[in-house]
Every structure is written in structure tokens, then in C-alpha cells.
Image (cartoon, rainbow over all chains, first blue to last red; front, top):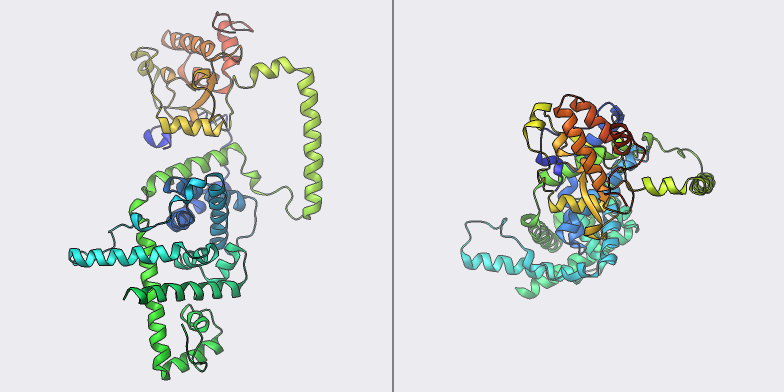
Length: 194
Length: 269
């Protein structure tokens, strides 16, 4: 997307007339890039789970890490940056959804399932059963209350309860109850299929 | 999920599985699990549900994601631009350590003073502001970028070749300038340093230049580009100087190389 990636011999101009980024800024850039590498996919999965398209998700991820760069530049708190990242992503995704109601089209979930993680040893019938099970599971998740979906997805991305509470601005107890409730729904749905 | 009151609650079972309990409470739960098959079975079911959900959650998007590299390159470019522009707030917030109310007060006063200043400048020099508003690019967004070429390379190619800009890049430039909805015929997505003078096909070298809304428009800049190309090839100006002049302020460069204070052609409006 960025034209600079098309031409490796491009020189920033004019090198002398512009003040180069300070050493501290460069270090922060590297740090933010490391965060990006680590959290891009989880952030994308999370915001797409909230209804964003992959394209919008990419844009949101970019905005999140630009905001992180500014946050660090301003010398603001470094405590619990993972929760901070997801909180910003959450807010941007909701904002995006508000701006574009079409984003809610992504509800069924099943059609987006990829077969990349299916055991290649499975025969076609097993694969179909496996996919069906995943579709149903995601269909159940998609009709959970939004807060429950958010808690579940953030937990699936590895956030601890404290981080989820911070990202969603809810209490620790609310996180715990929400996760228990959601898993109970998934469990009873799974039992009904069997 | 109903269970006997003496058994572990679902909430505690999950808290223990997630390692969220205190050491003492966790110990009690584990002791109970060691002796209660019923609760252990529930725990296994819980873990199964989690495993199935996690697999479905991860599989739901992984195959769709675009490559990591494109996003990385884009973020790197945007961070670099942010760092170079000085918008990286001096690496320290000016209000750090002050109370929020005081900082807000300072900000309000600063905005008020800025507004008064802008109004005064606007009153005294409205005409000049109108001419220069869009005629020169925002240095933060479009500082200019060059390819590694020598004068003989740029003179070997015929001037005014068609240097196409990718639609995605064009969209990005327009977004950055807040001109997403601008009429396509009212501007030219122009290279600040023209490719005929070694300018790069890079987002840092592109901006939407008006065709006719200012006296210093795209047609006038084309004249300067042709003049500079001729002068570089004739050895009257060296290539780096030409690039620097056009990147710093192309209007000033026009005045310098055409020895005039206003556009001389009929292209201007």
C-alpha cells in the first residue's frame, strides 16, 4: 500500500533540511514495531470479532500502534500496555462500527472459517463435521451479549482477568461472571449437538 | 450447569483453571478436585469447551489476514513520518506533571491566543494566505523523496513521461490531506520533486495540487519542472540543488529561476 515499499532505493528528502528523528524516538519506533509484530494478529482478530472487516481491521491496527507511539512519546504510563492496546482497539472498533453500520454484516462467522488448522489426516466426512462444529460454536458466540463476547475473545487472546477488566472498563468480578456464563452457554450448546 | 452445593462452583472452577485464585483458595480447590471425580469431569469438560472455542476463534480469521509485511512497512513509514514531523510531541508532553484542570486552562488560553493571532494575520494578509494555502504541500506529509540517480540518468530519459501512481497510494495521499471527497478534475496528484528530476514514486513525494484554485497551480509548476530539467541537462544547475529548491518551496524556486514574482504563463488563473 505504501509506495515506499515499491522502491528500496528511495531516499528521504532533503536529509539535511529536515531534523532527523531523535535517538529516543527511533528507539520508541522500534519498540512499537515489536509490539506490532506481537499483537497485530490478536488485535485484528479481536476487532474483526467486533464486526470490523479485515480491511478496516488493518486500519484500526495501524491507528492503535500509532496511538501507542504517541502514548509512549508523551511519557505516559507503561503499566499494562497489553490491556491499553486492546482498550484502544476496542474503542476504535466500536467507533468504526458506529460510522459504518454495514460492518455488522459479519455475524454468521461460519463462512470465514479456514481449513488451515484442520488435521490433514481427517477424511472428508470428519473435516465436514469438524467445520460444522466450529461454525455452530461461533454462531453461539455471535449471539452472546456483546460484553460477554468481548471478554471471551480477549481471554482467548491471552489477556488475564485484570487486563480484560481494564480494556473493557468493567470490574474483575464482572469478567469472571461473564466468562463463566459464556462457557456454560457454549458447553450446553455442544452437549445439545451430541 | 447445576452441581451439588458441596462441589466447586463454575466460577471457582474457571478461576482455578485460569490461575486467578489466591494461593490459599487455589490450594483448597485443587484438594477438592483430587478427591472429587465429578468436579474433575466438569473441569475436563470446561477445558474441552475452551479448547474448541480457541481453535474456532483462531481459525476464523487466520487464512484471511493479509501478509504481515505490508502492514509492517506501512506502520514503519507512518511512524517515521510522525517522528520526522515533530508531531511526536517532543517525546514529552508539555503538560506532564501538571493537574488536568490547569493543563486544560493553559490549553484553552493557548487556543484563544492562537485564534486571535490567526485572525490578525488573516486580516492583514488575506490575499497572500489564499494564494499559498494549497499551492505548496504540507512539509510534514510531503517532504519530498528522491531516487538514487545522477544528472546523466535524468537527462537520458525524455521529459514528461507518464509516471502512474497506484490507486491505493493516491487514496492514501488524499486521506492524509483530508481531500477524500475532492473532485478528481480539480487537482493533480503531483510529485513534489518530479520524476524527471529524480523524484521518487513515494508517498512522501506526492500531494494533491490544485489545477486552478490558486495562481500558483499545477500548470505553473509544470513550467518550472521543464525549466529545471532543461537547466540541469545544460549544466546550468546541479541536480541536488534543483531537487532541494523544488522540495523546499517550489514557488520560491519558480521566482528564482524565472526571475519573476508572479506566474508568467497563461496557465495561471
